[in-house]
Image 1 (tube, rainbow, N blue to C red):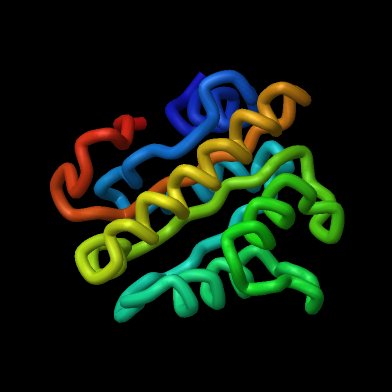
Image 2: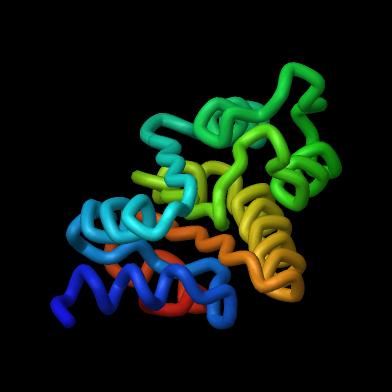
Length: 147
């Protein structure tokens, strides 16, 4: 079994899914492995993102949220625990270049991670993987686990 197969096997498992630091390679291997096991892969580039409204807009676009998405935290929680409009065996969300958002709006950044982490737990209880990888320089924030 090669590295990509091992990664695909890990991503296919709901146990352990949650919010992690994006590996230094930018997630290319993660995206390829996830797609190989039928997971939906979304990338949200947060370059220049400085507030909640912009974060929600970019995540909504990446995850293909329906038009009824309300652009608030409750609506984010509702959508990431539904995902019925994007049939897949689970999902991987890659948040690229998140440093600017973390610095400009740390409270909102942490709220977003909390919501996404809770969604991953909810999905794991249904044996559906939902992985979130956050691109931060160095360790960016200590509470994120390394993958």
